[in-house]
Image (cartoon, rainbow, N blue to C red; front, side, top):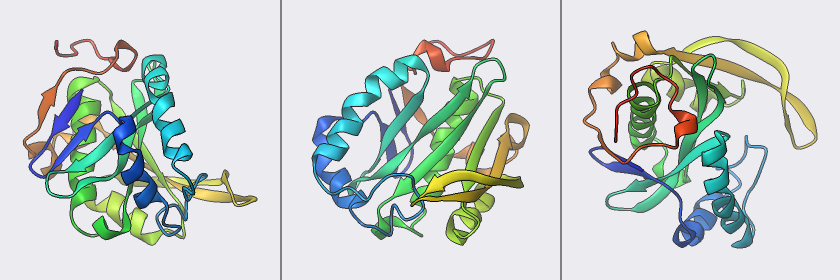
Length: 203
């Protein structure tokens, strides 16, 4: 499936994206706060891409390449930690350094929120940030996520247990935010594992 906004399209990753993802996530600054990376060889993005179809169908991860209409692939965003029973998931996003502060994050979050609430039928979208990653915290709050607390020793990175801030966005809150008004064209639909609401729209 695809989600198209004014500047960005979220589309499923393909092997042809590997070179671009290697260049973007080969920068240590981009992956500084992640449990993976930076990419050092083409085999790493290729392995990630190859695993995506099975992960989508299993309801494990629903990731998209963020494709800018002028610049091509600029990063990745997607849903994870799905609970069908509780109708919630989390969002994660990363962008190449050149696309920080350009509005790409806000549009990508608006597109993924549309997927979560309008298409998948979720009631809650969560997110995490490292307490030392002020840029990520500010970006989440700017688009409408509420900081709800801190999980101590939640994330292991570079041999250390690190805290994370927890954020949430509820369906009712999303309906009142400016991101809700972004024009979105949805093409296709997610795998059934991700469609949890009572009135999930047909393809």
